[in-house]
Image 1 (tube, rainbow, N blue to C red):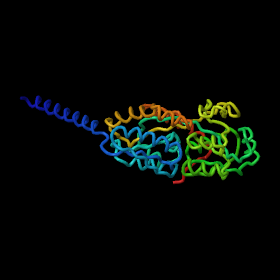
Image 2 (tube, rainbow, N blue to C red; image 1 turned 180 degrees about the vertical axis):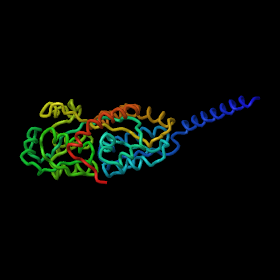
Image 3 (cartoon, one colour; image 1 turned 90 degrees about the vertical axis):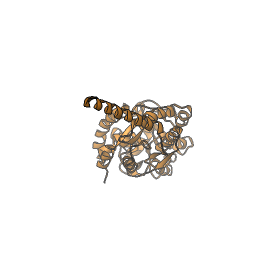
Image 4 (cartoon, rainbow, N blue to C red; image 1 turned 180 degrees about the horizontal axis):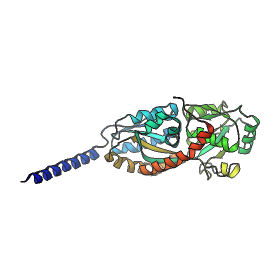
Length: 325
């Protein structure tokens, strides 16, 4: 046999071994427990998504657990995931603000994102303008009047610098012409506790964190930030139809993994996430708190992030939002 033929035989053998290895890897995935990192404290929307995804991925044959790694507007959790092996056994639940906004504010987050890649959108969360039940206002118009009567004196609650709760409020301030200052918390859970107690005067917060308190009479929802009314609270008007024409801001959540996750893992995770988010159980559970479950390809996440980064860049610049590192 000529040397040329020998080379062809060897190349074919190597290719065949590679295909066998890839097939074995796909069949063996997952080979150990899966960790879903929620970069905020328990009690908010991120936690709700994380537990839904964990339940779904556990159906692949290994336990899936949720770890809450809060701090620095979610950067601590994202940084942790970015440094894990890219083997498909560690994932991150990220709000849209984490990758559309935070890289504009933080060099650390910009670096982290270079080592993270998207897997799928998980859902969309309408946000509500909410105030304590004790605040003597009952409409968005009355709230604006109250804020304008007390310029620079009243605090609002934010789930952290650069979060959607923060930038949505800054957009609201810019459009409504009001002067309130932020109190930053490590996530929605502790912020909502202080909001109900009246330690902050208002917030723009997503349904999972506030809907039960609105229905329980501890908070009042005066408006919703999306272009259309929320299915969860259809009687609450939009900001666009009341005082701020064209106002439309929505938070979405997505699943991310360390960069370089094997295709063998993605080929199982992406359809499993789609199955999970379309399930009757998840749609009913998330729908009860105003969440619209969804799923997508990784490419769709990238396109949406790019569009929103452009939108929020101007708001951030005008509000002079920055992160100290």
